[in-house]
Image (cartoon, rainbow, N blue to C red; front, side, top):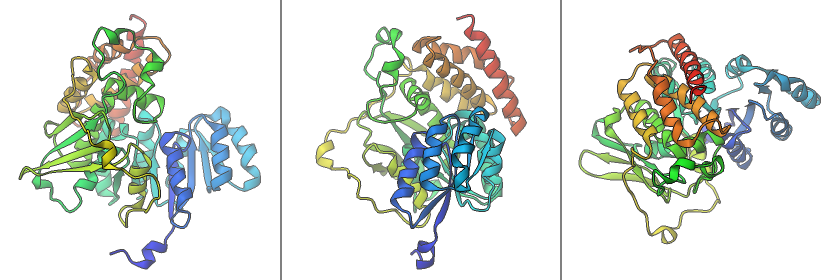
Length: 394
């Protein structure tokens, strides 16, 4: 039972990546509940115009633009409002440690989210985790730091939020397996021959979700689901061989948990990221009431499930292999994949060449079974360099 005192506390929120899909939807929820939340830090990589617009509307204490070339534009626009304006990646890492932050929504894209998340955890801030690469790259380190600093990590991904909700009141020893659902993306029914000439526009046309370009391409290749297996492994302490993927085109069942007695719990909802963001921000006090459209079972009476095809979507197999190998292999996989996705978006390689490039690149990994933070940094840098070199020969 939540006390009235805790209900009256305004939770101060930092949003890392406020101009992206998750960031803008988080601000929707802050606007929806002004008596419960206050945005005190907003950061962006390049989108200075939207960051300025957000800062003028939500009046945070501080904003950080990672691209230093955009600093003066943001500084000049916000100077009349007495908002602190800083720039650069290190400034983000420093800003999350401020006293006027209770929870950090990590919505930055890719590897760039790792260091700020570590800074926030060390400063004792709870994390609403959207940046799955943080756990993909350094899951062992992040979970260890979270335990040492006694902070909570609340998942924002719809699949992990679903599992989190299914496990409320349950015991870890009673879990048989986790079942992550996947939409299958835009190419679920395409043959291998059809997939040879996939365009960027086709890959960005996700059937159910509105996401940023990087995540959308990862979803189309099913690497995103591989990353979610790694994320689930660290969030819930379940080995990868007990985490399955079920392709569910309707995206209504967000994930499931099977227990040792044969019971299966599932969390259902419309494909709307406001739902898991709202749940994460409300934790651990309560669910936040919403007047948004609700799921009507009659409209979704035909829910289907199928097994993923790892021959057509080899990225998923590469992810399973990396998490089973452990150590710094998942870090290497992420580094190679980020270069591959960027190259595809720039039309330097074809969609079907991405897994070929990634597999070749990670073969250069100098395996480290128990990596330190600097080992992750070195692995990331080395595999990115190797991947770029391989690009020139493809």
